[in-house]
Length: 382
Image 1 (cartoon, rainbow, N blue to C red):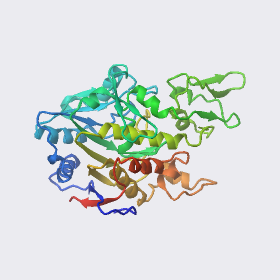
Image 2 (image 1 turned 90 degrees about the vertical axis):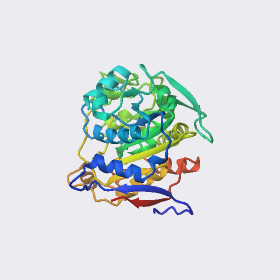
Image 3 (image 1 turned 30 degrees about the vertical axis):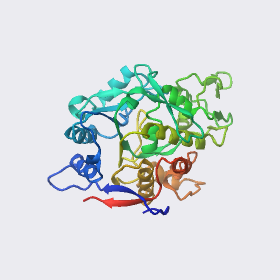
Image 4 (image 1 turned 180 degrees about the vertical axis):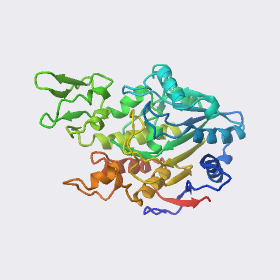
């Protein structure tokens, strides 16, 4: 159990990646989710959405299709009709519309043959096929714009690659659901609470940030060789912040990331409320940045294991706590950051990896709005 005590902590089931000689990690994942109670969900004849991230082209830290196949196999064995899903992105890359998104998924190995079920892009061809879902108790969002296919499903399962993130500290279950299930309008809604600022004294004019902007939110002055933010176009997605190697870009509104976290938690509540849900998180290949990048750095932490729970918040809290108990991987981005001149130790692996990021607000707000509990009990599955 973590430091947040409660009378009835949520159960989080855990197993390592160690396997017997007669099974592999995908087989062990099946045993884990069965022990965690996925069999208690009535799936007979029902549509079952399995929400995951297919990885940007060039990125290799995303979850292998074998894990998706394991979940789909269990769903089909219970009579369900599973499909893998994700929604389109705001930023440039291979997943901004359904055609490119599907090609990306296929190239990264997610086909009906390998994954055991179809891939359906949740918000349609251009990211406009969404549903306005009321957020009960929402403080920042009254209606969440969620991909229609996600909401049409009778049962919702999240399959998450737990890793670092340049804005939200880590990318876990809540981010996979809240941001990942938002349509393009929904993603813009979550990011619309703040705009970045560029310090001209630190800007080198390398234009790397411009390559990450899909909305003409940045402008380059050829005379001064400096970048600036075009306020009326910027959606506040923060991709430019992660792209800058010189710390020239930050959010003008200090609360922007915290408000993003709160909106993301409320979007998650919109997705999971009112229907059977089950959540899985694999803490492996813990890259310092999101799988949305067309590339990935080496893991900052060792592989920890597989987690499953009916409570998405308890699941994220358990994964965070497990990661904080690990030692940084030698030679990783995190290890190098901790030995750099002027390093300020935040005593937190995710804060030390991305000092401009913040994640505690997300967990606190998720508990406040009744998404789940931060108190949990670990049940080991061998």
